[in-house]
Amino acid sequence: MSTETGPAPTEPQQIQVRAQLSLSTVAARNLATTTKSEPQMQGISSRWLLRALPWVQVSGGTYRVNRRLSYAVGRGRVGFVKTGAEVRVVPPSLRELPMLRGIEQDAVLAELAGRFTQREVAAGEVLVEAGEPITEIYLIAHGKIDRIGTGKYGEAAVLGHLADGDHLGDDAIRQSDALWEYAVKATTAATVLTLPWAAFQELAARSAELREQIAGYLADTEQAQNQHGEAEIELAAGHDGEPELPSTFVDYELAPREYELSVAQTVLRVHSRVADLYNDPMNQVEQQLKLTVEALRERQEHELVNNAEFGLLANAEYDQRIQTHSGPPTPDDLDELLSLRRETSHIFAHPRAIAAFGRECSKRGIYFGSVDVGGHHIPAWRGVPIFPCGKIPVANGHTSSIIAIRAGEDNQGVIGLHQVGIPDEYEPGLNVRFMGINEKAIISYLVSAYYSAAILVPDALGVLENVEVASPRD
Image (cartoon, rainbow, N blue to C red):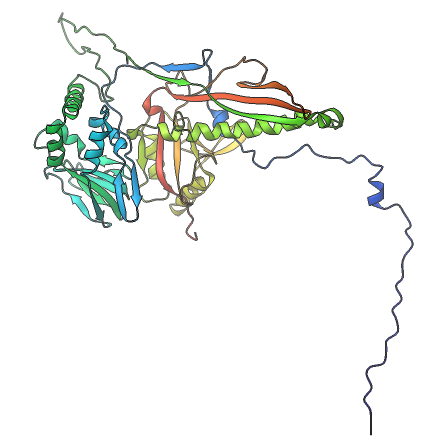
């Protein structure tokens, strides 16, 4: 009878420990002074918008933009609310229609909003043909619509693009038996709300305020005005002899827009023990303040782009907003954007929008150039620098906007507003004020930045909207 035996036991391994021959780096650091950097911050961007805008001193805290009297009422965007598949117009936003701009009673707008009917439109569907009577007002809740007319030689030509919040057909209020001067075709699937003119006229017959508003609007449109809607200046030219010359004067707006300086603030808190003992080799309060100021400047640029009161995106006029032809930003789109003003000095776009424009240029075999701006090589189109601006939002991860401006007060452009010389000023338009020490020995400083922006004339600012920035693999 045999027995199985396991493997023979192994000899215990001997671990050799080498004697330390020199001082370790861990111990050495106890006697050495570490070479260190100042505190770093990842959120600091190039902030080209703050550098590009010419800043105007606003000593009184308010900047008034005086303009010639204008009869043309700016067209805005109508708002909508979506509940499931149902889309309804937000009644107060109907004031963005020029003929309804002065309506004060929300009840009238609410009743009018309830008369709109939702309609789903397929891509390629023609809503109206040129020459047909205008029988409805159209509000575009979602999607892209093209206005198609006839070119000089009889070919079909796209006269313009309309998108979310735009409206058409309301100009028929100026004339009876108005006809569509162009065809209206959906380039994408769209949701539109329609209001028959008969329903509008029926409500106007019952509402005295609505009738008065329409009468006032029509009176303004009958005034002599130039192509920009400004009160006409009567002139004579090309005459012979001694004819009687016209007399005229330049009328001003009676209630010009005023821009008050906005503010971004925070309270910086530092414990007195930290401020007293830990200042070698770097001053703790100074470093805390430095990063706080950087964060305030970042917020300042964000507000200049996105603020509802004075931000560039929200304050561009309706006729200075255009849509892309096909989605991604193409050379044709930027050419059209540049054509809207007599001079464009700066273009601002999200980095993803710049990349998308580069892809479109590459598809066509076009290489856009660059210009030198303060020693930086900035990409440019038609000689206009294209600055990256990460503060321009990217909606739903794939659509953004491109901003074009003409800058400068002397050039009737876009300007930045600030006030220099404020108490305890740390930087131009930014001050740091000591607030005291509380019972917990914490020192507080109030850090404030004062700023705003003004658009002197409407064509100083243009926006290319609904720019597709997603790459093909997205």
